[in-house]
Image 1 (tube, rainbow, N blue to C red):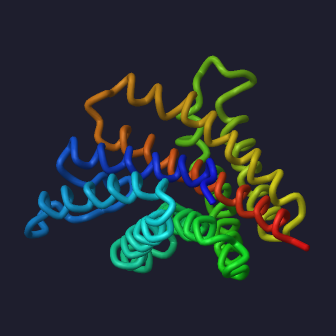
Image 2 (image 1 turned 135 degrees about the vertical axis):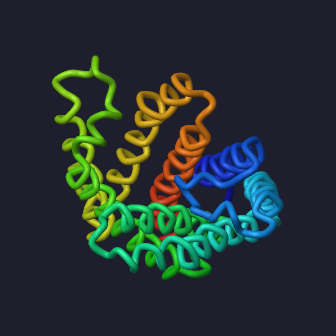
Length: 249
């Protein structure tokens, strides 16, 4: 089953791979690999190749499921091997948990893309578990908007009424509400659709302008790709819910 969510998720993986290949390293925005690591640049190019190839293959009927699983494993391994251990050393730093949630959400997007490629009826519990995890990540994202309200507000265009701080809080509430809807199953698909639209707006109003303002910034380019991956993951949540409705007797 080829769904739009899978295609967008794959496009995000391709974009991230191209960014890492262009800069020859890892952006700390998604994977804080130490630059002094032996073979750092080779590892970066190899990871970029995996992202690009898997992002392309996710659209193929026979290879789509494997490609999605590869991406889920890549993001999940990065979270467990690098991000979570660092976060556990400073558990009171909410930014660390935000990073854990972001990588986890990207990994769960791959799990959902895998389930969609296989057919949600083949393993009905898998997409449900992935959606629960994704919903929990959204709650973390929303809390981050309150924990780092001033920083979040600084990302909002100054021309957008009524104020930057208003939108920092409003989008935080929106992500928490979406997370709770997905966790509870109440209007979950509507929440996923609205969340997807919000991430698209983030890209248009925040991430693309940031690249235009500072095109030499590795992190700005990576943030665009990560936002696209999260957009694709949210769309996969909506797609999986629709597929389950269709498959239901």
